[in-house]
Image 1 (spheres, helix red, strand yellow):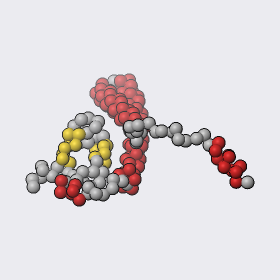
Image 2 (spheres, rainbow, N blue to C red):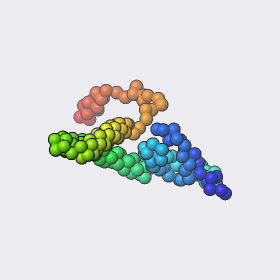
Image 3 (spheres, rainbow, N blue to C red):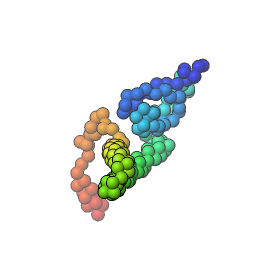
Image 4 (tube, rainbow, N blue to C red):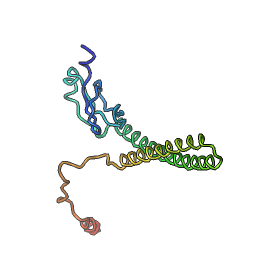
Length: 173
């Protein structure tokens, strides 16, 4: 068996790039090398293992490992968003400080330092915009629901309004 035969193609749902991944019996969470976004790769088995696992029940929704991976991913998104916000604030503060340095350098007739401070200030502003956009992207990812909408809406016709409970209590006497 060649190394290419043991790998499967997986398409990133965010950027559409294709990845070659090795089959694994459990679901994995990994970062896309193209867009650097976290994504879930479903469990895949080789053709040999597929025959053995055909009779096993599919309890993917209640899998403790999957729940742990999802909660770890959610905490990582919150942490990354916080880091991006802090980095954006640091870049803004650094840009303001560099603007003050550039003003003082201009007043002191030091054109070389003034130009250096202005270029560094522009770099800080670009960094602030970049980290702000990353924070917005992490915030959108954190707000994205974990569960998708059901294929069919739930049927509530068999449920009552709860008044039957009162009658049941009255009948106990």
